[in-house]
Length: 291
Image (cartoon, rainbow, N blue to C red):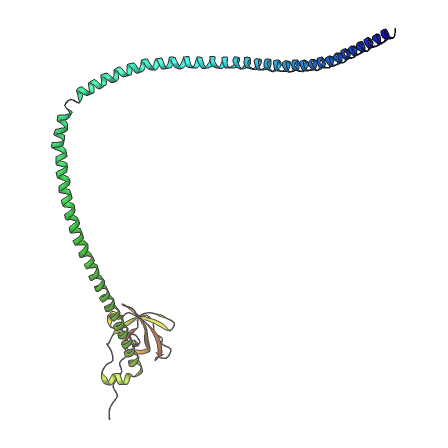
């Protein structure tokens, strides 16, 4: 009995051990099956996502293919139209080629005598042109030579003109100085006559005797009918007479070619003043009587 109990206890222990092992194996198996389930579920989800992506790609490719098909259809239609146009151009080109060949043949026939014409042209035209060019070149060189000579003469003439012009300016300046000296001497002479009439009378230089008439009188001024051409000098004195009677003495202050203007310096007659039409004569100075 004691042995049987021991055996039962041992069997029970072994059974419990086996049962515990089974439980542990079951638990471990459940854990593995759960992890595998979750992995498969995740894999299915990933496959589903890939499938949806592939489906979307398929739809996009279909849309693109449809658009490409429409575009290709339009391009095919355009290419067909281009092909028809090219075929038409080809036909026209063939016709144009035929016409060109015919024209080329006609041109070859037309230019057959060109060689002879060219030779005659070279002989009759080109040779003469070359000869003419040589002649013109020689004439041009001669003209340039003559031109240089003429330019040299012109330069020499300019130099001569400059020298003559300088001499003329010097002479003109000398003439100006001489004219100024002459004016000064004439003015001095007129002043001398006015200041010392007695000495002028002694040396016999009373100036030219000039007869004139009064043209107009205005205030203290009057105009005589004689001027520089008649010998009238600046600051000469004239006697104004009327019916042979002296009425005034005037002094010349301005001389023109045909007339002169005077200023009244002395009234001889009482109440009588010079008027237009009166006579005028150069005032003469008598020499002094010597003892």
